[in-house]
Image 1 (cartoon, rainbow, N blue to C red):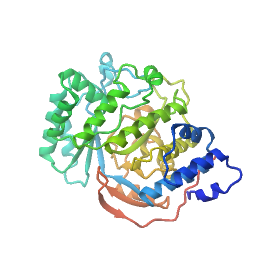
Image 2 (tube, rainbow, N blue to C red):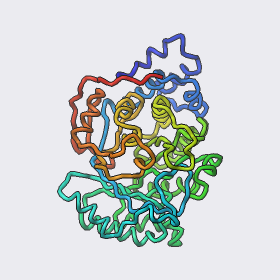
Image 3 (cartoon, rainbow, N blue to C red):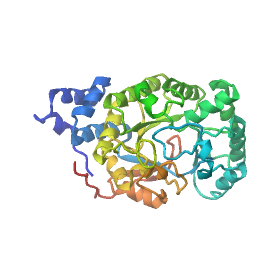
Image 4 (cartoon, rainbow, N blue to C red):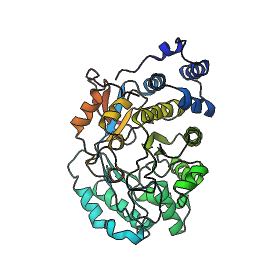
Length: 389
């Protein structure tokens, strides 16, 4: 899909003066306000938002779309928390429906990738009371001893908050211990929606927004990069999305420690919010676009292709997205259990490169910190078309 040129919209008499003012701010390198962000959600049509987001995307990352070779380890789906949107976790009283991997089983997964050119292992799961700080520190040490060059991205702020509270240690001490053991960076999970009005209704028993932000801020001060997410398309309003992104933008101003922002689409399969309709593909694309426009200090916007599907992931590259995550190798169940588009999420490097190039973009394999591993510059003519409204 070829994005439109934003200059055409600026000269279009059909575009409102307020939207043109926002576009002029963006093209002039000026930060937009929270009210501007809400207005983009409320009044911006997909073509306008896509053109403006693509302008920002190409200013930051040119025609490049990134991916990495990674695999996931999910130590358990047993969880002490009961988030209403979650289709993945099993409470302690429903252990028969869950799994708990031992240290040996986790290391068996790591060893199964010996000799393969993966650069990252992503470790996240439920919050299990027996899998504590010492348990995971031991795992990290063993992974690093076995494969020192493998980047370990692990543990959401929710998992870390529970570990540190249980160990009666501070965020600084707990993160320092894990970092020394081999933890290289943090994923962005557990953010959900920061605003207390919504957070109290969908995940009241997990860490607060301030606690999530404090953990990521501390990681940044320790020299660890992190990601950030936002769960959208459920009971939140546009103002809640912008509030969420504004808090992230403010922290990024202070630390510059975030690598990428990942909007996560709410899925309503087998959870306590199954009566809530899911967002349309058009809304997915609009959300990517506004995220790219508003988060001016985030280097990258990622579309997690297993959640939204390959075709939407292709189109998203015209709406501000410059990263499609990784090969994954069918090693995650978090989103497939929630009814994600990809029930067996695995792509070879060749398939992922082709998916990117078919969109008219240049594919670049990266490591976790966006250092280039392989450059697949050749692009194919775009054959992607936008969905109808």
